[in-house]
Every structure is written in structure tokens, then in C-alpha cells.
Amino acid sequence: MQLHRFFLFLWVVAILGCGSNSTVDKPGVNDHEANTQFDSFKNEFPIVELPVRIKGCQTEYLSSTKEISEDKYPHYINSKEGIFGTFKTNGNYIALLTLGEADCFSPILTTYDNEGNKIDEEILMFGDGSDLGFISEEFMVIRPDFSIFYSDTVISFQPDSLGNQVPGTYMHYVKYKTGKLLPTGRIEMAGERTDTLIN
Image (tube, rainbow, N blue to C red; front, top):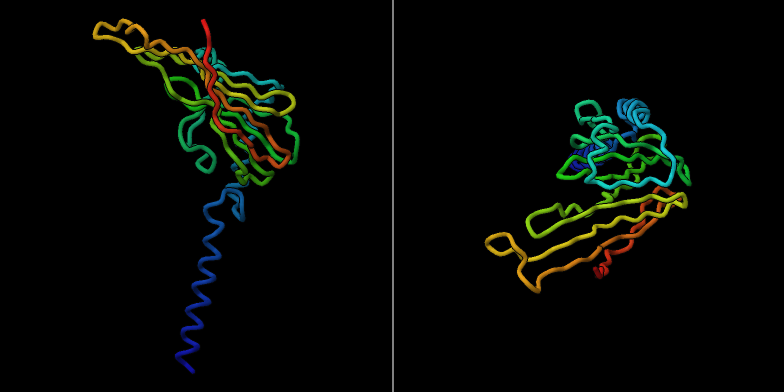
């Protein structure tokens, strides 16, 4: 009987331990520090009106965005990002737009509940970059009806040893995704599509 009680005690301790750990990694859930941090974090974002249009490779955003790092908001930033803005949503959630730093800016749409728990996140660009024989132009828009569109218009060709275009390898196309912000804060995106462009 004593051995049975001992194993029962261990089982209860294990269950309680698992239960207590389940909320530690979730910002805002039973976590006063994260809640306080979220209030400060969301107030960093200026209010913008829809539609929001961003061309990630335009340098104009260098002067208009405020840089923010994970040192200040470790619960909500995973790397160095620029603050773009927040907007009035179609539900009981908060939507924040940041710009990740890479060869071009990466618009990142993240939604949260009012306590700071992340609901959903979408990087609104393909992130292909550009290189010799590959030119990429990224674009995204969030419209007043909360529909989302982002695209990458690409010119590509096979370069020869001198960097010149190999005949017959030229391609001009656009790949894109469409979707929408749901009243729940979920970001619903359709699969990638590609259309050939005619010069």
C-alpha cells in the first residue's frame, strides 16, 4: 500500500509539473511581465489607414520606420525589425506590421489577442532576392476589406560567362498569394500561383 501511494504521489507531481510548464512559453498567459511588455510594445506602433501598400525593396522605409530589437521586447521580437504600424481590425484582435531586415524589407503581419497571445503570423513576401540573371520586385497590399495580396514580379535568364543573357532562357512572370484577415485574427492564405507576363 505504501508503495502504491508513493507511485501515486510521483504521478501527481509529474502532472502538476507538466501543467505548470504549459503556460511558461506562451507570452501573455499567466505572465504579468509579458502582459506589461505587450502593452508597451503595441503602443510603439503608429496607427495607419488601410489600404497599406509596401514594396519591400524601396529604400524609403529606411527613414520612416523605427528600429526595434529583441533586447527590448524579447517576448515579441525574434530579431531586429522595423516598426511599420497597426490598423483598426475587423474583430477583437490586434494586428501589427513590422519590417524584417534582409536584402529587402520583409513585411510581417502578426495578430494577437488583447492579452498579448499570438494568434497568427504571415511573412508577406517570397524573399527570393536578386542576383545576376534574376531580378525580383516584391509587393504587398492589405485592403480596406481586409483582403491580402502579395507578389513577386520576376525577370530571369541564364547568364553566360560574361554575364550576358543566353538566348532562349529569358522568363518574365509574377507569382503571388491572396488571402484575408478573418474576424478571429487568423490569416487565411491560398496557395501560391504563377502567371507568365508578356513584354
